Image (cartoon, rainbow, N blue to C red; front, side, top):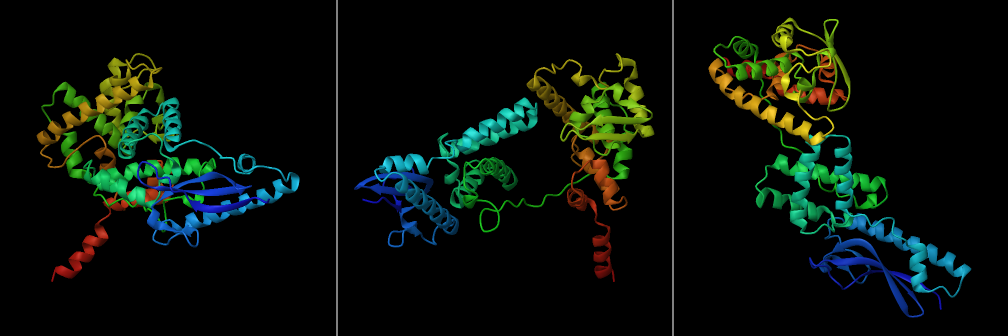
Length: 404
Protein backbone atom coordinates (compact mmCIF):
# COMPACT_ATOMS: atom_id res chain seq x y z
CA UNK A 1 0.00 0.00 0.00
CA UNK A 2 1.40 3.41 -0.97
CA UNK A 3 1.99 6.15 1.55
CA UNK A 4 0.15 9.46 1.52
CA UNK A 5 0.58 12.91 3.04
CA UNK A 6 -2.10 15.41 4.01
CA UNK A 7 -2.25 18.83 5.64
CA UNK A 8 -4.38 18.78 8.80
CA UNK A 9 -5.24 20.82 11.86
CA UNK A 10 -4.71 18.56 14.85
CA UNK A 11 -7.47 18.61 17.44
CA UNK A 12 -5.11 18.76 20.42
CA UNK A 13 -4.92 22.42 21.59
CA UNK A 14 -2.02 23.89 23.50
CA UNK A 15 -2.39 25.65 26.86
CA UNK A 16 -3.68 28.77 25.08
CA UNK A 17 -6.40 26.90 23.21
CA UNK A 18 -4.61 27.15 19.86
CA UNK A 19 -4.45 24.16 17.48
CA UNK A 20 -1.30 22.94 15.69
CA UNK A 21 -0.94 22.73 11.91
CA UNK A 22 0.69 19.48 10.82
CA UNK A 23 1.48 17.11 7.96
CA UNK A 24 -0.08 13.66 8.48
CA UNK A 25 1.89 10.84 6.84
CA UNK A 26 -0.07 7.59 6.48
CA UNK A 27 1.20 4.13 5.48
CA UNK A 28 -0.67 0.85 5.94
CA UNK A 29 -3.39 2.65 7.91
CA UNK A 30 -0.81 3.87 10.41
CA UNK A 31 -0.14 7.59 10.69
CA UNK A 32 2.57 9.82 12.07
CA UNK A 33 2.48 13.58 12.35
CA UNK A 34 5.00 16.32 11.79
CA UNK A 35 3.97 19.65 13.25
CA UNK A 36 4.69 22.70 11.12
CA UNK A 37 5.40 24.66 14.29
CA UNK A 38 2.48 27.06 14.02
CA UNK A 39 -0.79 27.27 15.97
CA UNK A 40 -4.06 28.88 14.90
CA UNK A 41 -7.63 29.24 16.17
CA UNK A 42 -10.07 26.54 15.09
CA UNK A 43 -12.25 29.21 13.47
CA UNK A 44 -9.37 30.14 11.14
CA UNK A 45 -9.19 26.63 9.60
CA UNK A 46 -11.00 25.62 6.40
CA UNK A 47 -11.58 21.90 6.95
CA UNK A 48 -13.07 21.34 3.50
CA UNK A 49 -10.21 22.88 1.52
CA UNK A 50 -7.48 22.09 4.06
CA UNK A 51 -6.12 25.59 4.25
CA UNK A 52 -5.97 28.59 6.58
CA UNK A 53 -8.89 30.97 6.11
CA UNK A 54 -8.41 34.56 5.02
CA UNK A 55 -9.63 35.60 8.47
CA UNK A 56 -6.15 34.76 9.80
CA UNK A 57 -3.74 37.73 9.44
CA UNK A 58 -0.96 35.47 8.10
CA UNK A 59 -3.19 33.27 5.93
CA UNK A 60 -1.27 33.85 2.70
CA UNK A 61 2.17 33.09 4.09
CA UNK A 62 0.92 30.13 6.15
CA UNK A 63 -0.82 28.54 3.17
CA UNK A 64 2.30 29.06 1.09
CA UNK A 65 4.37 27.37 3.78
CA UNK A 66 1.92 24.46 4.08
CA UNK A 67 1.93 23.96 0.32
CA UNK A 68 5.71 23.93 0.11
CA UNK A 69 6.00 21.50 3.05
CA UNK A 70 3.44 19.15 1.52
CA UNK A 71 5.28 19.23 -1.81
CA UNK A 72 8.53 18.51 0.03
CA UNK A 73 7.02 15.49 1.80
CA UNK A 74 5.42 14.10 -1.37
CA UNK A 75 8.74 14.28 -3.23
CA UNK A 76 10.39 12.46 -0.36
CA UNK A 77 7.67 9.82 -0.42
CA UNK A 78 8.27 9.07 -4.08
CA UNK A 79 12.03 8.82 -3.59
CA UNK A 80 11.81 6.56 -0.54
CA UNK A 81 9.14 4.26 -1.95
CA UNK A 82 11.14 3.74 -5.16
CA UNK A 83 14.05 2.63 -2.98
CA UNK A 84 12.14 0.60 -0.39
CA UNK A 85 8.49 -0.33 -0.75
CA UNK A 86 8.29 -1.48 2.88
CA UNK A 87 9.27 1.82 4.47
CA UNK A 88 6.99 2.76 7.39
CA UNK A 89 5.26 6.05 8.13
CA UNK A 90 7.62 6.69 11.04
CA UNK A 91 10.67 6.03 8.84
CA UNK A 92 9.30 8.41 6.26
CA UNK A 93 8.97 11.13 8.86
CA UNK A 94 12.45 10.48 10.21
CA UNK A 95 14.13 10.47 6.79
CA UNK A 96 12.42 13.24 4.83
CA UNK A 97 11.11 15.65 7.41
CA UNK A 98 13.83 16.25 9.94
CA UNK A 99 13.45 19.48 11.90
CA UNK A 100 16.08 22.09 11.11
CA UNK A 101 16.41 23.08 14.75
CA UNK A 102 14.58 22.83 18.04
CA UNK A 103 15.90 26.23 19.16
CA UNK A 104 13.25 28.49 20.64
CA UNK A 105 13.08 32.28 20.71
CA UNK A 106 14.60 32.38 24.20
CA UNK A 107 17.43 30.06 23.13
CA UNK A 108 18.36 32.64 20.53
CA UNK A 109 17.82 35.46 23.01
CA UNK A 110 20.36 33.86 25.36
CA UNK A 111 22.89 33.61 22.52
CA UNK A 112 22.27 37.31 21.82
CA UNK A 113 22.90 38.27 25.46
CA UNK A 114 25.98 36.03 25.68
CA UNK A 115 27.44 37.77 22.61
CA UNK A 116 26.80 41.21 24.11
CA UNK A 117 28.45 40.19 27.36
CA UNK A 118 31.45 38.72 25.51
CA UNK A 119 31.81 41.97 23.55
CA UNK A 120 31.53 43.90 26.83
CA UNK A 121 28.53 45.87 25.59
CA UNK A 122 27.06 46.07 29.06
CA UNK A 123 24.72 48.98 28.41
CA UNK A 124 23.02 47.04 25.62
CA UNK A 125 23.23 43.81 27.65
CA UNK A 126 21.44 45.34 30.63
CA UNK A 127 18.79 47.00 28.46
CA UNK A 128 18.01 43.89 26.40
CA UNK A 129 17.92 41.67 29.50
CA UNK A 130 15.23 43.94 30.92
CA UNK A 131 13.27 43.95 27.63
CA UNK A 132 13.28 40.15 27.49
CA UNK A 133 11.59 39.95 30.89
CA UNK A 134 8.55 41.69 29.36
CA UNK A 135 8.32 38.93 26.74
CA UNK A 136 8.65 36.05 29.23
CA UNK A 137 6.14 37.68 31.61
CA UNK A 138 3.63 38.02 28.78
CA UNK A 139 4.10 34.54 27.34
CA UNK A 140 4.46 32.97 30.82
CA UNK A 141 6.88 30.40 29.43
CA UNK A 142 10.42 30.11 28.10
CA UNK A 143 9.15 27.75 25.39
CA UNK A 144 8.25 30.41 22.86
CA UNK A 145 8.57 29.10 19.32
CA UNK A 146 9.30 31.52 16.50
CA UNK A 147 6.21 30.30 14.64
CA UNK A 148 4.04 31.54 17.50
CA UNK A 149 5.27 35.09 17.03
CA UNK A 150 2.75 36.23 14.42
CA UNK A 151 0.86 39.47 13.79
CA UNK A 152 -1.80 38.62 16.36
CA UNK A 153 0.84 37.81 19.01
CA UNK A 154 2.66 41.12 18.40
CA UNK A 155 -0.52 43.19 18.50
CA UNK A 156 -1.63 41.57 21.76
CA UNK A 157 1.86 41.98 23.19
CA UNK A 158 2.00 45.69 22.34
CA UNK A 159 -1.40 46.19 24.00
CA UNK A 160 -0.06 44.36 27.08
CA UNK A 161 3.08 46.54 27.21
CA UNK A 162 1.20 49.85 26.93
CA UNK A 163 -1.77 48.76 29.04
CA UNK A 164 -0.66 46.33 31.74
CA UNK A 165 2.95 47.55 31.96
CA UNK A 166 2.30 51.27 31.31
CA UNK A 167 5.10 51.65 28.76
CA UNK A 168 5.17 54.51 26.29
CA UNK A 169 4.74 53.63 22.63
CA UNK A 170 8.45 54.25 22.04
CA UNK A 171 9.44 51.89 24.86
CA UNK A 172 6.99 49.25 23.64
CA UNK A 173 8.40 49.45 20.11
CA UNK A 174 11.94 49.06 21.46
CA UNK A 175 10.87 45.61 22.69
CA UNK A 176 9.52 44.85 19.21
CA UNK A 177 12.85 45.87 17.66
CA UNK A 178 14.61 43.30 19.85
CA UNK A 179 12.12 40.59 18.81
CA UNK A 180 12.68 41.52 15.16
CA UNK A 181 16.45 41.33 15.58
CA UNK A 182 16.34 37.85 17.10
CA UNK A 183 13.74 36.65 14.56
CA UNK A 184 15.95 37.79 11.66
CA UNK A 185 18.88 35.84 13.07
CA UNK A 186 16.71 32.72 13.29
CA UNK A 187 15.69 33.16 9.64
CA UNK A 188 19.34 33.55 8.63
CA UNK A 189 20.10 30.26 10.39
CA UNK A 190 17.05 28.64 8.72
CA UNK A 191 15.47 27.87 12.09
CA UNK A 192 12.22 29.45 10.93
CA UNK A 193 10.85 30.07 7.44
CA UNK A 194 11.05 33.63 6.15
CA UNK A 195 7.49 33.08 4.88
CA UNK A 196 6.33 33.42 8.49
CA UNK A 197 8.19 36.69 9.10
CA UNK A 198 5.69 38.81 11.09
CA UNK A 199 7.24 42.23 10.44
CA UNK A 200 7.13 44.70 7.55
CA UNK A 201 4.67 45.41 4.77
CA UNK A 202 1.33 43.72 5.33
CA UNK A 203 2.40 42.61 8.81
CA UNK A 204 3.48 44.32 12.03
CA UNK A 205 5.08 47.68 11.29
CA UNK A 206 7.52 49.28 13.69
CA UNK A 207 7.12 53.02 13.29
CA UNK A 208 8.36 55.17 16.12
CA UNK A 209 6.41 58.32 16.99
CA UNK A 210 8.19 61.57 16.30
CA UNK A 211 10.01 63.06 19.27
CA UNK A 212 11.13 66.60 19.91
CA UNK A 213 14.87 66.98 20.47
CA UNK A 214 15.65 70.20 22.29
CA UNK A 215 19.19 71.53 22.55
CA UNK A 216 20.66 74.69 24.01
CA UNK A 217 21.29 77.72 21.81
CA UNK A 218 24.45 79.85 21.61
CA UNK A 219 23.25 82.27 24.28
CA UNK A 220 22.50 79.44 26.72
CA UNK A 221 25.86 77.78 26.07
CA UNK A 222 27.53 81.11 26.88
CA UNK A 223 25.49 81.29 30.10
CA UNK A 224 26.78 77.86 31.10
CA UNK A 225 30.38 78.78 30.23
CA UNK A 226 30.19 81.88 32.45
CA UNK A 227 28.16 80.54 35.37
CA UNK A 228 29.70 81.39 38.76
CA UNK A 229 29.66 80.09 42.35
CA UNK A 230 29.86 76.39 41.48
CA UNK A 231 31.04 73.75 43.89
CA UNK A 232 33.95 71.51 42.88
CA UNK A 233 31.64 68.62 41.88
CA UNK A 234 29.41 71.00 39.92
CA UNK A 235 32.41 72.47 38.09
CA UNK A 236 33.55 68.96 37.22
CA UNK A 237 30.11 67.96 35.90
CA UNK A 238 29.97 71.12 33.77
CA UNK A 239 33.50 70.49 32.43
CA UNK A 240 32.53 67.00 31.31
CA UNK A 241 29.35 68.34 29.66
CA UNK A 242 31.19 71.15 27.85
CA UNK A 243 33.96 68.77 26.76
CA UNK A 244 31.28 66.59 25.17
CA UNK A 245 29.69 69.60 23.46
CA UNK A 246 33.02 70.96 22.14
CA UNK A 247 33.64 67.62 20.41
CA UNK A 248 30.34 67.47 18.48
CA UNK A 249 28.30 65.88 21.25
CA UNK A 250 30.80 63.16 22.20
CA UNK A 251 29.08 60.34 24.09
CA UNK A 252 29.61 60.37 27.85
CA UNK A 253 31.28 56.94 27.85
CA UNK A 254 33.81 58.14 25.26
CA UNK A 255 34.46 61.29 27.30
CA UNK A 256 35.19 59.23 30.41
CA UNK A 257 37.42 56.83 28.45
CA UNK A 258 39.54 59.68 27.06
CA UNK A 259 43.24 59.32 27.97
CA UNK A 260 46.08 61.83 27.78
CA UNK A 261 47.73 59.60 25.16
CA UNK A 262 44.84 60.42 22.83
CA UNK A 263 45.78 64.11 22.86
CA UNK A 264 48.61 65.01 20.47
CA UNK A 265 49.40 67.35 17.58
CA UNK A 266 46.59 69.63 18.71
CA UNK A 267 44.01 66.89 18.06
CA UNK A 268 41.90 64.41 20.00
CA UNK A 269 42.19 60.92 18.53
CA UNK A 270 39.91 58.23 19.94
CA UNK A 271 37.88 55.15 19.03
CA UNK A 272 34.12 55.42 19.53
CA UNK A 273 32.79 52.81 21.94
CA UNK A 274 29.48 52.48 20.09
CA UNK A 275 30.79 51.46 16.66
CA UNK A 276 34.61 51.28 17.13
CA UNK A 277 35.17 53.98 14.48
CA UNK A 278 38.32 56.09 14.72
CA UNK A 279 37.73 59.82 15.30
CA UNK A 280 40.29 62.58 14.97
CA UNK A 281 39.15 66.11 15.84
CA UNK A 282 40.97 69.39 16.26
CA UNK A 283 40.98 70.46 19.90
CA UNK A 284 39.09 73.78 20.21
CA UNK A 285 40.70 76.42 22.43
CA UNK A 286 37.80 76.13 24.90
CA UNK A 287 38.49 72.39 25.25
CA UNK A 288 42.19 73.15 25.84
CA UNK A 289 41.22 75.18 28.89
CA UNK A 290 39.35 72.18 30.30
CA UNK A 291 42.36 69.91 29.67
CA UNK A 292 44.61 72.31 31.59
CA UNK A 293 42.15 72.17 34.50
CA UNK A 294 42.94 68.44 34.96
CA UNK A 295 46.62 68.48 33.99
CA UNK A 296 47.90 68.51 37.58
CA UNK A 297 46.21 65.15 38.21
CA UNK A 298 47.88 63.54 35.19
CA UNK A 299 49.66 60.30 36.10
CA UNK A 300 51.38 59.38 32.86
CA UNK A 301 50.29 59.36 29.21
CA UNK A 302 48.05 56.33 29.66
CA UNK A 303 46.07 57.91 32.50
CA UNK A 304 42.45 58.98 32.08
CA UNK A 305 41.82 62.71 31.80
CA UNK A 306 38.69 62.54 33.95
CA UNK A 307 38.82 60.61 37.25
CA UNK A 308 35.73 58.37 37.03
CA UNK A 309 37.40 55.43 35.26
CA UNK A 310 40.72 55.47 37.12
CA UNK A 311 39.61 52.79 39.57
CA UNK A 312 37.50 50.74 37.16
CA UNK A 313 38.28 47.04 36.82
CA UNK A 314 38.51 46.65 33.04
CA UNK A 315 38.59 42.87 33.34
CA UNK A 316 35.00 43.11 34.60
CA UNK A 317 32.67 44.66 32.02
CA UNK A 318 29.91 45.03 34.60
CA UNK A 319 32.14 47.11 36.86
CA UNK A 320 33.01 49.44 33.97
CA UNK A 321 29.33 49.73 33.00
CA UNK A 322 28.28 50.46 36.59
CA UNK A 323 30.91 53.18 37.00
CA UNK A 324 29.73 54.89 33.79
CA UNK A 325 26.11 54.61 34.92
CA UNK A 326 26.81 56.04 38.39
CA UNK A 327 28.95 58.86 36.97
CA UNK A 328 26.30 59.83 34.41
CA UNK A 329 23.64 59.89 37.10
CA UNK A 330 25.77 62.21 39.24
CA UNK A 331 26.53 64.49 36.30
CA UNK A 332 22.85 64.81 35.43
CA UNK A 333 21.95 65.55 39.05
CA UNK A 334 24.54 68.34 39.23
CA UNK A 335 23.60 69.73 35.82
CA UNK A 336 20.09 70.26 37.13
CA UNK A 337 21.34 72.70 39.77
CA UNK A 338 23.91 74.26 37.41
CA UNK A 339 21.36 75.29 34.76
CA UNK A 340 19.23 76.79 37.51
CA UNK A 341 22.17 78.96 38.59
CA UNK A 342 22.78 79.89 34.95
CA UNK A 343 19.17 81.00 34.55
CA UNK A 344 18.34 78.43 31.87
CA UNK A 345 14.80 77.03 31.76
CA UNK A 346 15.53 73.82 29.85
CA UNK A 347 16.20 70.32 31.02
CA UNK A 348 19.89 69.57 30.56
CA UNK A 349 21.44 66.10 30.75
CA UNK A 350 24.67 64.70 29.37
CA UNK A 351 22.89 63.65 26.18
CA UNK A 352 21.63 67.20 25.60
CA UNK A 353 25.23 68.17 24.74
CA UNK A 354 24.78 66.26 21.47
CA UNK A 355 21.40 67.90 20.80
CA UNK A 356 22.89 71.30 21.57
CA UNK A 357 25.65 70.82 18.99
CA UNK A 358 23.02 69.82 16.42
CA UNK A 359 20.82 72.76 17.36
CA UNK A 360 23.59 75.33 16.89
CA UNK A 361 24.87 73.63 13.70
CA UNK A 362 21.33 73.87 12.28
CA UNK A 363 21.49 74.10 8.50
CA UNK A 364 24.73 76.12 8.48
CA UNK A 365 26.98 73.06 8.16
CA UNK A 366 26.72 70.71 5.19
CA UNK A 367 25.16 67.32 6.08
CA UNK A 368 28.23 65.46 4.75
CA UNK A 369 30.44 67.32 7.21
CA UNK A 370 27.99 66.69 10.05
CA UNK A 371 27.95 63.02 9.12
CA UNK A 372 31.72 63.01 9.53
CA UNK A 373 31.53 64.79 12.90
CA UNK A 374 28.77 62.53 14.20
CA UNK A 375 30.42 59.43 12.68
CA UNK A 376 27.11 58.21 11.25
CA UNK A 377 27.43 55.29 8.80
CA UNK A 378 24.47 56.52 6.74
CA UNK A 379 23.94 60.11 5.57
CA UNK A 380 20.19 59.56 5.95
CA UNK A 381 20.72 59.12 9.70
CA UNK A 382 22.45 62.51 9.86
CA UNK A 383 19.76 64.24 7.81
CA UNK A 384 16.95 62.77 9.93
CA UNK A 385 18.73 63.73 13.15
CA UNK A 386 19.54 67.26 11.99
CA UNK A 387 15.96 67.81 10.81
CA UNK A 388 15.05 68.18 14.49
CA UNK A 389 16.99 71.46 14.63
CA UNK A 390 16.33 73.12 11.26
CA UNK A 391 13.44 75.57 11.59
CA UNK A 392 14.50 78.65 9.61
CA UNK A 393 12.59 77.98 6.37
CA UNK A 394 9.43 76.92 8.18
CA UNK A 395 9.61 79.99 10.44
CA UNK A 396 10.04 82.33 7.47
CA UNK A 397 7.14 80.66 5.62
CA UNK A 398 4.92 81.10 8.68
CA UNK A 399 5.89 84.75 9.05
CA UNK A 400 5.18 85.41 5.37
CA UNK A 401 1.57 84.32 5.90
CA UNK A 402 0.65 85.77 9.28
CA UNK A 403 2.70 89.00 9.35
CA UNK A 404 0.47 91.36 7.35
